Length: 50
Image (spheres, helix red, strand yellow):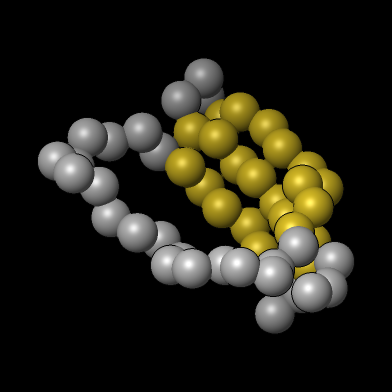
């Protein structure tokens, strides 16, 4: 995987849910972002190696 795009919609879920788990050694760079309808956040990250 060399790119990941996330759509974040804020919702309360108790204690929360881990999305990826441990990411030690991973290097991701934010390459794009925007807010949709003043509620949803759209983020794009590119992998930059270990």
